[in-house]
Length: 177
Image (cartoon, rainbow, N blue to C red; front, top):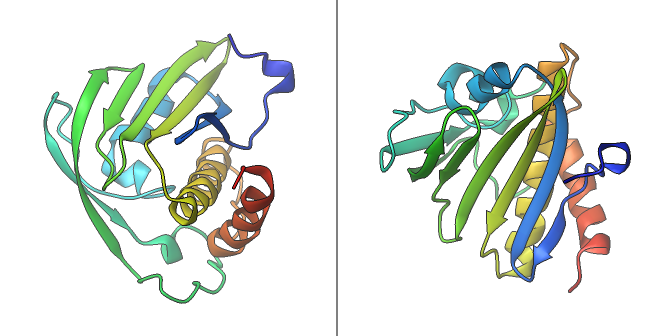
């Protein structure tokens, strides 16, 4: 079990190509689950896209990172204004576990555990074998989860792209080459 008193918001490699990030978020668990599964709420911190909560169901995630925060900060070169990815639900246990395929990696699992009035979210992104992708993914998840935490706390999130760039540099120092 996670020691909540020492919970680090940075992700860590829990296996050679597996990133795990944990966050303690304001509950209840059903509210956090809604931010994972409902397009409008998920679009406020990650990516929109309708989700049929059925094992094996396809879904399309649509990122518009420039719209996540005001101001968004300058988008780095090479990143489009919009990005789309087709995924599939591979594990489903509402409101505790949601796993989906994720591009060419091994997929992403979100696990929620009620901790008093809060919810421990554990995000596990598997088979991220390329270092450049790992740094982008680590900084991306961290920045997106910062926005989720702010939204759930009714606070204004930090500019997405500015956070992402800062976090990418920090993960380059923290994660082994």
